[in-house]
Length: 108
Image (cartoon, rainbow, N blue to C red; front, side, top):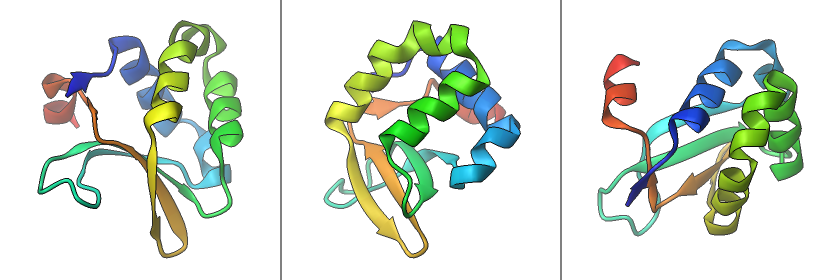
């Protein structure tokens, strides 16, 4: 498992605190355990059922274009390893090989 960058952590925090996330019902799951993960946890993005990666990229860019440019490559890497599950009215994109830094999880 690898840890996401501090820049991405900061962008996720800013996004969750902004009104931008309301349009696609965006939230971050710091300890999501997906199918076949045997209790291990990882990073997850919960979004409305019809949201997709273009919506996520637009939202992140609108919140903080400077940070978005710094983490765009990392986000594209996340996209390439993403898995998804249905959560009723929402869906989750999760990343079995990615985790939050421990200090960020404890603060929240």
